[in-house]
Image (cartoon, rainbow, N blue to C red):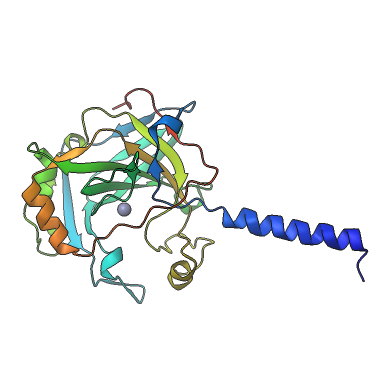
Amino acid sequence: MLHRPLAVALVASVLAAVVAFAQHHQTPIDIVRSTAQTDPGPKLRINYPDQCTVSLEDTFGAATAGYTIAREWATLKATPACDASVAVGTDTYKLVQFHFHTPSEHSIDGVHAPMEVHFVHMNTNGCSAGLHPLLVVGAMISAGPNAGELGKILAPTPLAPQASLSVNLRALLPPTDSYWRYDGSLTAPNTDCSWSEGDKTKQLITGVFPESVNWYLLESPLHLPAATIRKFKALYPEGNARPLKSLEERPIYHSGTKAGK
Ligand SMILES: [Zn+2]
């Protein structure tokens, strides 16, 4: 039999572990401008080429590893055939794909945008690259007239599967690149790196998706014509955005100035 103080200490430590386990770092979150701290770390550097061929796919109904993608986790996904990357300090992250949500997954001071785009990058050291091998650059998309390169990608919706086109990736991003940064998660179930969160079924039951992402949310929105946003929404009538999650004890950092290009 355990000595009583020892038993109490054990129970307390188990409870503390449970509480700590409950403090997840999930995405998306509400960005509260007034609480952001100036980022002491190195700046995000974006190295996207002018010319890139991307193939487009509506992932709704696609079967991956025996798992059929439901509409709420589906998206319009663009896969680049070019060499595009971002860098932070000595780490380089290669662009794997970018995709779209409606409405926006993040909010800024409680306000959602009609859409949000996510540029998903993987550390060049792959799944073994520390706690956060992924880096996602997100940008809000609002209704506006200057669609530019983004309009080229989304104007033809509903798209034919695997449609392919050439885009200026560098010109996709907003001209002012100040951003917020925080540690978060993927916003759909994922097993690409054998995450500790378990398989997709377990992730859906626990509501905890892999906490593997360095999140960068650009401060300036991109724009699409209202008619194009309506066409995209028609692809996912119930929306394909994950609800907001609690920030817990995480800091949110603001770049203060523009990202490097
Ligand atoms: Zn996303």
